[in-house]
Amino acid sequence: MYKNINDYELIYLVEEKDENALNILYDKYKPIVDLKAKKYLKYGKKIGLEYEDLYQEGMLGLSEAIVSFDQEKNAQFKTFANLCMERQIFSLLKKASRKKHTLLNDSVSLDEKINDDENTLLDVFFEKGTNPSELYEYKESKKELFEKIYSILTPLEKEVFDLKINNFDYNEISQLLNKSYKSVDSSIQRIRIKVRKIIDEIQIN
Image (tube, rainbow, N blue to C red; front, side, top):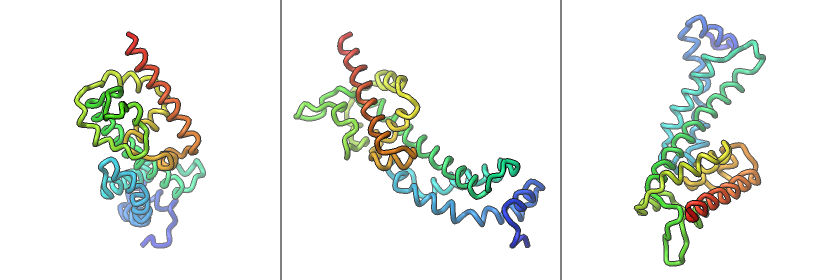
């Protein structure tokens, strides 16, 4: 039943409360959700997410696509569903990285000396290989400082900041945000300047 019915007809039947049509749509797109969960798994593992987390989020995106698809906009359902799945999974990645970032903010001082070479956390903040989990040992809390820094970042800089502080490299950030490598690099350089300026102002006062 419904084996040869296209997506548009299935969506219509779903709107008519046909549960069989709904199940067919889910079964049809589950392999795509699986591919997307695997696509982002490497990124997710860096911030404590597993395949099941990403797969579930992708299924939520698929559900949203089924419920909100508007055939009058002349878009293909497959394209719209892919967009919703990607958006839902990436939203989870951002929330998870933001949560980890917040924990880091509560326990780390940007300008505290962290080794015998007189390096500060600011010096290594965006260096490749920095592991946020290793920074929890520093006891000084600079939550207000981090909040001040965060308040002056642009939306793109906030996204770059959240991902970079969680050890995503330039290429990964570029792929996740769909931005060029140059754009990511420029954002990080601007963040460095803003952070340095705020710390200098605090030290003067």
